[in-house]
Image 1: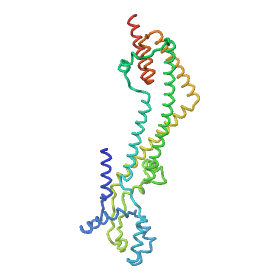
Image 2: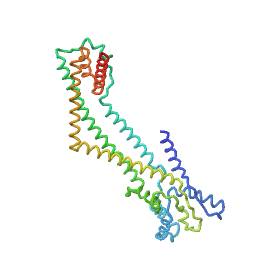
Image 3: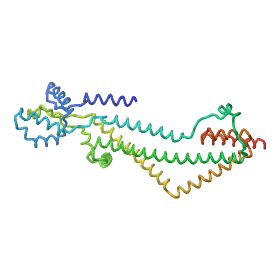
Length: 349
């Protein structure tokens, strides 16, 4: 939250107090330089041109030869329409980071909910003390009770596996859609129609070629205020505006580009890997065989433990587990009981 606050304050400062450094020729007076700085500061907020763009504009615009009173209104509209706007730093970044934060927090809690959906916390002893006398054990013998409890626990475990697989699949799909959407959104605001501008920038840095992002994040532009164009006073000293904010703007968006590209690629790989594992016959057969073997071994262990080792109190505990506990908690209690029985037998031996 502190980082977001700093970004927002800096965004406000940049938009309403554009920190430009205007460089002039050394032989001009201090007054001329001061007036030029003020003119550059307040005019380039809306009218920014590269050197080539301004020269083409002057050559193609014949209205400059007309009187000032006739050409000024149309010139103002033309300059505003043809002016090349420069992206101010952090213009869309707060929205991108806010969406990323909310999305990843939502996915984190969704993942925790998926993993903990069947993990209820309860105390067998504390709840059992008040209900022990009212427990209805019925006339079922140990084998029937063991089979019933084992069947219900195994069925619950199978349903849990299916629900977990579906939720896991939906979570991976959501992660892919979210990451790819943020990647496309960021590129639409930075370089519409060119989604691979970040890769072109990396290639230019490796090959020492011209930086293709100069048109996206112009660092140096020629500042021509509207009044100077309307009065045709081209002998006035030319101002070279250094857009220092665009240095940080460029670094920020390039880093954001590769970060979103990385998480999008990871989400695609994770989704494809999971789909191949689910849809593959070999994987499904292996999973089914291992699961059935595990379920059979678990059922045999439960039946043997109930039938041979646990008395009336054990029946009550298992009935309470079946009614009130989750699969994970029931397995944990049964495992502890099994370990306790094994330790008791070892001590007796």
